Amino acid sequence: MERPCVRVPREAGEETRQALAAAALIDEEHEIVVDEGTLYLPVTDPDAVAAEYEVVYRDVPAHDGQRTPADILGFDPSYERLGDVAIVDEDDPDRAATIADAIIDSDLPVRAVLNRASKVKGELRIRDWTVLATTGDDRDRPITETVHREYGYEYLLDLSRVYFSPRLATERHRVTEQVAAGEHAVDMFAGVGPFVIPMADREATVVGVDLNPAAIDYLRANARRNGVADRVTAIQGDVREVAADYADSADRIVMNLPHSADAFLDSAVTLAGDDCVLHYYDIQHEDDPFGPGEQAIRAAATDYDVEIEARHVVRSYAPHELNVCLDVRLSR
Ligand code: SAM
Image (cartoon, rainbow, N blue to C red; front, top):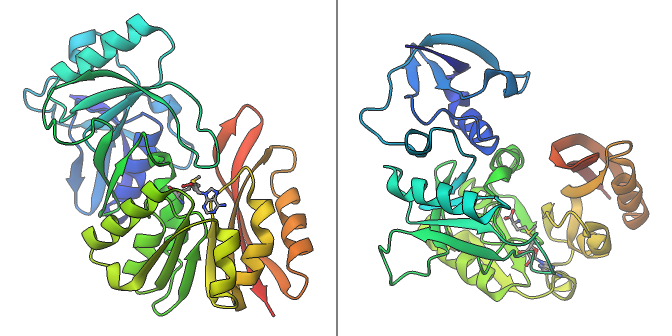
């Protein structure tokens, strides 16, 4: 049966799949097809696919006998997958419960369905969750703990104790692909390691700092899990206090704390070596998404030539607000 599919070269397949999954556009009822180096990814709504992708119609096989939540519900619910946890964002408790039950009853390998119960909040950027449904399997593990796979790496994490967003997968890949072997990198707000581990895997030596003790425990576990522990130093603490221990050392710095990164620029400058690339995340109004960040960086890095290498829109954050990244080269 002909279905709308995004057509991409095989090398771009994983990145595209992640982007489509983040937009909840993957048609889970049909199989991805590979044909002479080209990948066809079935999508649920061709009109919602970003303009950068090519949509074609072609025959793709239906998943064999797999019961999807849509088969059970009669409509296609919106949910995200993080390892064996499914996440929904539903205000209506009845609708949330109905969707959760359908996810658990489907053939998806999901152990628990969670609903977002608050915004990301506080210094540790954690949110509250409501557990909507579980299979009851694997009771030895916290229900909110899972192993998420991203670009071939595995991240063990507990959603109730640490920050993690699968929606940033493509962005993390964009940044970590720039890393060269032998670099010294610092992730000032490392979380469970989704920048640290790919950078270390590219043979950088990486220091990851986080205020949250649970995030640092998971970062260490994830460094071991992904075979890069020998190149990763994980430090629990306030990066403003840790920065002096690594002064003048960094060839690359990641600053993913977008609401308040400007308050940490002095520490970034302390960490920066003579030639350093800074990946500075910000959330700003769409009218001037990069200006405030650029000004703050120039004001902090007075001993450096400041060259903006990329002004990158990561995603829309809220109406009229953008999550952006400035890639900035600091040269002394
Ligand atoms: N980079 C990770 C990722 O992409 O998943 C985590 C980013 S999360 C938005 C920001 C992280 O910064 C949180 O894990 C939080 O605990 C940490 N954090 C907040 N204030 C901090 C501080 N003063 N020093 C070090 N880490 C801090």
